[in-house]
Length: 140
Image (cartoon, rainbow, N blue to C red; front, side, top):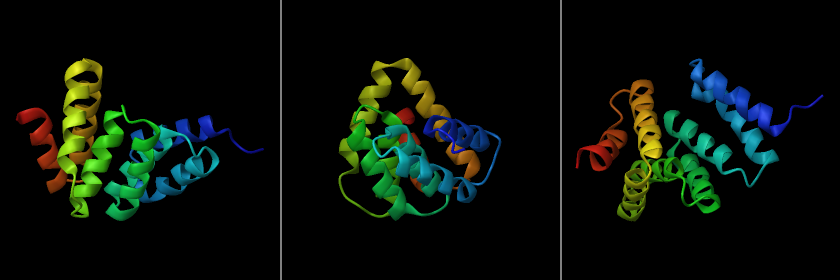
């Protein structure tokens, strides 16, 4: 019997939280995105995993889809900014400003983005793009 998209997504999140490697989880979230093409959370997670696995071009494509599906999701935009920085694309400032507005307006979103940035820096020490983004969002 095949899993529902929701259970596959939830299991992928639990495996991520348990410390499983991004490279192992990418196929799980690819399947989520293949089965639920309009799932912004699926695309957001896939982009994040690609970023952690040093695959910024794939991260950029996934993050673009996530932002298109849910422009008000700050994590989707964070992923897009990171992918843009990693691939030397222009237009970063606009997305950073949207994230700043969202996290200033909703304290829960600020906490979530801050925790995700801390998680990213813990999983990928010395991540220069993440350090820059953290400064722009929380230290400026």
